[in-house]
Image (cartoon, each protein chain N blue to C red):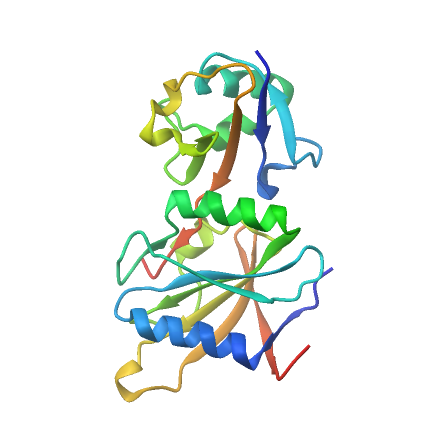
Length: 144
Length: 93
């Protein structure tokens, strides 16, 4: 069982926000992989948004295969799957819910809607299981 | 013709938790029909009503996305490996 909250290091949190900010006004996306079964995000893997869109993201299909093979070889899983919303709040959209296929993952959403004022950035985490969205607390720590 | 099929987490409910199963067929279409016979319900998750691959399911023959090959009609050979991965996608919409 995963804890009902996301515990993540300050460094990883800041990398996700920096990626979201760098790709604004397009949506940014990526994964933080961790040892299978640990629930601990460790390895930051920014992904290319093949859609290059302000309202949609999709991992490139070739990159996706590479990513999953690599995680498999390292006995990792996608602990966090993150993406940004660039004009709306950091809450899963209907699109996000319908394509959420990793019930074990923490879905992190970052909003860069207020990026012109340089923050504060919304950084929120959800579980999405069978179309049900549950928000969870985010605990940012210096180290695990 | 034995084909190894790698199953993503979300579809392992159909394969009794197995990460990889064996199937047979000379095309992806035939392989998925064979999988359906062994693991009822799985084909509907991969193929739409018109018989085409679902837009947000990626199917790879060895290292190649079958969309860049022959799609659902892509031909298979003995010893090939097929990987199924749901797209990671979403967005504000």
